[in-house]
Amino acid sequence: NAGVMQNPRHLVRRRGQEARLRCSPMKGHSHVYWYRQLPEEGLKFMVYLQKENIIDESGMPKERFSAEFPKEGPSILRIQQVVRGDSAAYFCASSPSYRITEAFFGQGTRLTVV
Amino acid sequence: KQEVTQIPAALSVPEGENLVLNCSFTDSAIYNLQWFRQDPGKGLTSLLLIQSSQREQTSGRLNASLDKSSGRSTLYIAASQPGDSATYLCAVMVVGAGGTSYGKLTFGQGTILTVHP
Image (cartoon, rainbow over all chains, first blue to last red):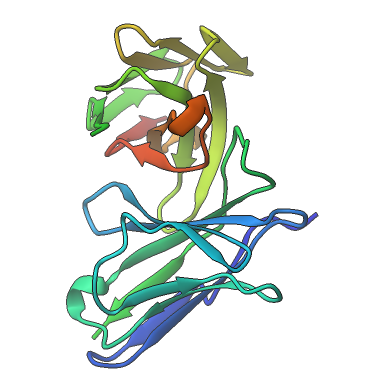
């Protein structure tokens, strides 16, 4: 049973481009969480999604950021018109159900905006 | 708003020492507390998870305790080894509506541990 898979592992974008980060949860998991780790800062919650639904997006920046988790395929975190301040490690975690007790994390995508 | 603090921010010890990492949280209404390890440029590895009703958990040389009423947890590492060098993160899951929760974690800033031979 493969773990949480994130790709790409490293992503370089120029300012103003779009970044698309993908997360495939563990088999049997239908709940996905995205976290961001800015340089010299801790991990911060961004968004919680179930299949086809956004449950909690209280940590998402108000502009340029969006997330989806379609019925088929991976969860996507999309950042439009990236700026230098978006450079960070983005981690995805998944769980099997609403009543989870443990979070399983992917290896992360390291976004660098040049 | 839940805040998690980890002390010390960095720790350097010689191989073989027993050491303690500290984590404190401001809201005692937690569902569970989890300790993670993060190696440079890598993802998070879950080390120990303590449910709110538990006092401690053990795995090999690691022991984590939880005192929910005082908002504190400690991670004890026995007989440290150079391979233990990493950043250790503490995270709490907050109780949501109706006494249940989901996987939203609040993390501390981490303790950077260096164990030198």
